[in-house]
Length: 263
Image 1 (tube, rainbow, N blue to C red):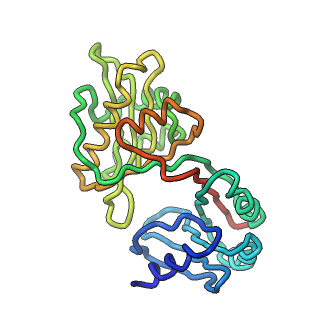
Image 2: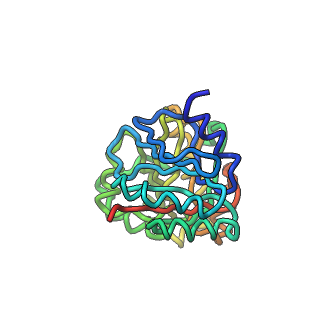
């Protein structure tokens, strides 16, 4: 068992904790605390992401609050994810806010384990750069997952070798939906479904399912073995049923993503 796995194992024994990802292929790991009441470390990936990941586990909210000085000394933008049931995570949310973190997102974490080839989606293709502004407009009516991209963000994703923007074109040659996402993780073998949209007057025709099938097949073709998404509209039963219909399942409760920027 390596150092990261040993800390991750210890973290499971404490009452409150952030999400601890599997694997340990990070460019740098900084341990901030390690005792019977508090374990905390910062993970930095070998890329240009502005935020490092703060992982923590604490016996009490007061123990977590003792990180104040260590976090201030880091002078580093941080992100941490708090999983659990709504009522159970509130004391930990209050402490994160006292530490200077702000709530960025609240979502249901949905996972799809071992990926299997999906049915072909004949109406879905790779999106074109010339369709950029139409795609931006369509994405603003998303189906429950991550918020929409800005034009520059979507343009970057259109040309990314690590991500995809797939468009659905109806039989009458109308672009009516899109799905975006990327490969992630140390081995780039996980598939993150970032956004999916179908324009309102074309819903109920199975187009969302076709988009999901095509996206999963794209990921498999590049070596993806599992997938996840964040259902941001946690009360959207229609969206949840759509994702469940292609195999995604809630990973338990909700996840609250918090971000911290140095003063």
